[in-house]
Length: 209
Image (cartoon, rainbow, N blue to C red; front, side, top):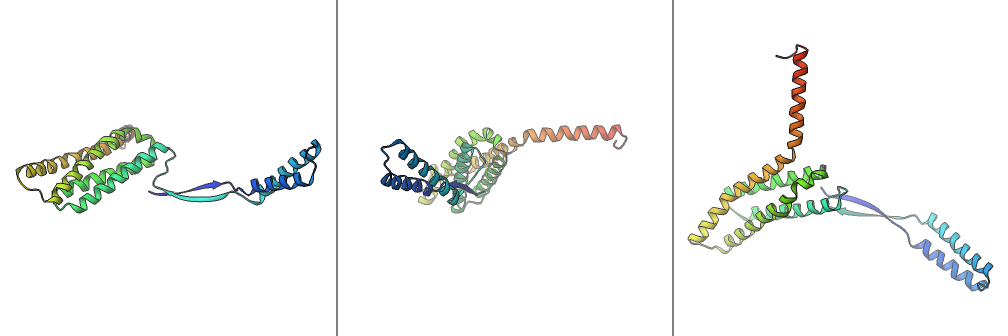
């Protein structure tokens, strides 16, 4: 997922060369006269041009999590990935197998959503609510649950909270999977239409019953 971005950083040496030549010429020429000032400026411009040709821009590499070409989409995907990483860590820390299975489903669907939007940034608008509300709220609830579990809280209230979280985790996982399915709704309709056309063509040629 991470990308290596290469950018060109212009060299500052041409500016230093231009300034140095201008200062030197000003020191040796009577720049209070117009012709001398023009010579100094011209010499500085020539120095800048020569230095720019001999000192090309420096290529700088830096790694970014995503590079879709749309800045706010990259930021959204980065935020989703960070929350999914938190979800993964929580899953590792919680021993309950049923809850763990639901959290694994959440993470798997979330990672697939990220991959889908990265490949097609136009789909980003379809997952804004998921990114801004559903996923953060789910992670927050599970963090609070993990905190209670770590503290060893017992009693009826704790048991009721635990049962509610475990039950809702399955529903949340299903919602995440439905969100992923929704991203492919248009493609599924197009595929279905294409299959219908193909079947009709085959029937028309007597190649299908």
